[in-house]
Image 1: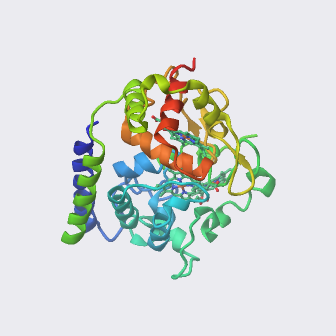
Image 2: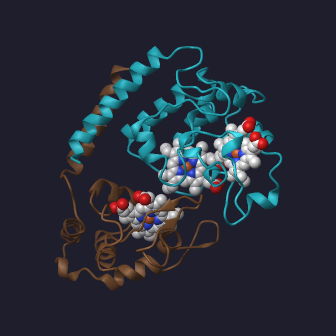
Image 3: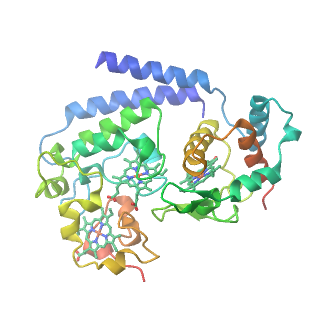
Length: 175
Length: 137
């Protein structure tokens, strides 16, 4: 694709994200299936840039302060270089903040925030109290199985993680 | 808000002028990198590219790292990221989408060379790398 066109696309996307942020309802966002399905929100740059090494972790799984910290250190992202150009980085951060756990737009987010101190800004979803509690039945030995590799590999067990579905029926722990 | 929009627009324009050019190909990228390195395309070396791909370097955490660690020993096969996600094959023979987008190629060379070699790759090395992958079957 032509780079200039893409550049215009980025500017347009930032504009659209801005409009969306203003029209965001304070209650449940549309498409929030409640339960353990995440709100179906998306953003082109986020899909493109944050899903090449792992699934694109839903914004509702961490608070705004976490996303700000994480997006500020992409050149040293858990030991890997995930750096982006400034325009793309700014666009993705806007999207993450607008739909973060403490943005008040999803029931999943509210549950993630329960038990988190207001000044906490964890970099990992897998270290939040919410995550640890939800996974207390998974043993240490299971996490380090070769077929899983890391707790961050949600899709190894949650077969529809890429679609934001984390309910009981779609969980299967691989051997 | 306006200041921010201007800043983003400027950054975007900067990018647009830095890399122009629509659909790229492995051959056009090799030509581009050879020109940048100041050598003829015929001076690019697939065997040097293979060495770059395979050589292990001491990683930040003491573990040896190489391009092959994620992209597998055979670049026509699918690899795996550290988190366990599938990486489509890097060789164009197995995955025609590879080396068709200069911006994407530059982005990953920048990141992965930093991660594996602790420095950026030179234009010559990038050309060698594509030369090797282009002939991998």
